[in-house]
Length: 330
Ligand SMILES: NC(=O)C1=CN([C@@H]2O[C@H](COP(=O)(O)OP(=O)(O)OC[C@H]3O[C@@H](n4cnc5c(N)ncnc54)[C@H](OP(=O)(O)O)[C@@H]3O)[C@@H](O)[C@H]2O)C=CC1
Ligand SMILES: CC(C)(CO)C(=O)C(=O)O
Figure 1 (cartoon, helix red, strand yellow):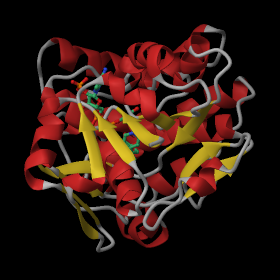
Figure 2 (cartoon, rainbow, N blue to C red):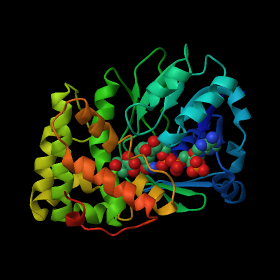
Figure 3 (tube, rainbow, N blue to C red):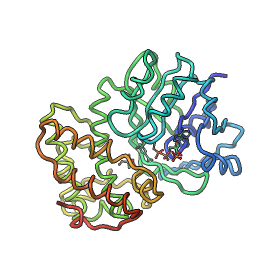
Figure 4 (cartoon, rainbow, N blue to C red):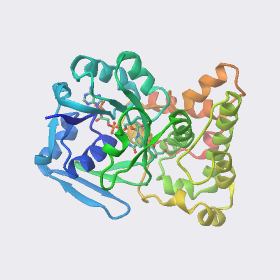
């Protein structure tokens, strides 16, 4: 039977795939045994900070460590970290039906283009996942913030077909602006990883917010100079975000309440990668801004310093560095 295949069952893949399966869609989770075995044993549990608590029994999911599951794909959702994009594309090229759309649910700007290059003639779309998903237990994934997934517009109504209770996708004709807007928020991922703090505690600290804001303002100047439009998944427009972040904490907590609608334990995906000793997506995030600077943009010393500090933490095996903002700011 034609299936939705999750290529890379981790935080995003298990959560999105689990919600699709819970709605009755045929879903295959293709991933590692360390992720799939606990699901085989306990079933998949999904929860969120809004009160969702759902068990998806193994009978609702096909679980496989084998890329052969791609041969039944009606749609492929690419949910691996950016470093694995090429190897996943090679498996899709070899095994998935040509008619199956391939959707990147990855952070960063260039994953869909990298997939497109290796999958010529296929319907490849960029997607943007605004929410954060964290592990709560071996087979338990928890959505810690909210928002709808945005999908690059194209033939057929893929966004509507993939929207199910608890998961809404909407189409966009300017996915590049949406992705750059998400990248603006994702610049915080490295600061969160280096701080060792939860996102909420970090956002409640004005010194951290000043560094987050200064880095964001720097990136916005680089993007403006490059003529790149930015549409972040926030109620406030991009140009106001640094100003909001710099407000004194009592005012910030009142005016930017939505930014704090976040599970108290949430940390960014890069914090989990650093802690687990996995590769990070720093080259796709701060690296994208630094690359624009190299092509003649205005300077971005904070983005460069954050990238350098994160790479040092990786090289030195510092998994939860607990740095303060002054130890990072250039
Ligand atoms: N987590 C989050 O809250 C958010 C993440 N994102 C983005 O979504 C994307 C996915 O992130 P996330 O879900 O956190 O990533 P995870 O690392 O949790 O999940 C990806 C999984 O895919 C596995 N994988 C990689 N290559 C293969 C392969 N060839 N065959 C089978 N499995 C494979 C990985 O295993 P291994 O580690 O062994 O390679 C890992 O278990 C990233 O681009 C991220 O930035 C976007 C919004 C929020
Ligand atoms: C936390 C969030 C949603 C934004 O920085 C994210 O994209 C991640 O954890 O990678």
